Amino acid sequence: MKSNVGGIDRIIRIVAGVVLIALAATNTVGWWGWLGIVPLATGLLGWCPPYALLGFNTCSVKEAPKS
Image (cartoon, helix red, strand yellow):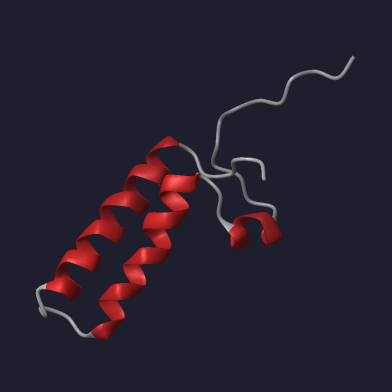
C-alpha cells in the first residue's frame, strides 16, 4: 500500500473527518456525520482507495530509483 495522499490533502481530510464526527456526536447533524470516519481514516493512513483506482496521487514522496 503506497501512500497516495499528500500533506495538505491529509490535513484537510483529518480536519473534515473530526468535524463531521463531532457534529454527529453532538446531534447537530444526522447519522450521515458518522461518514466522517472515512476521510479521517484515509487522512491518517495516507492512502485512499479511489485515488489508487483512478491513478491520482497528491503525495510528493518520490520513489527511489531502481538499480
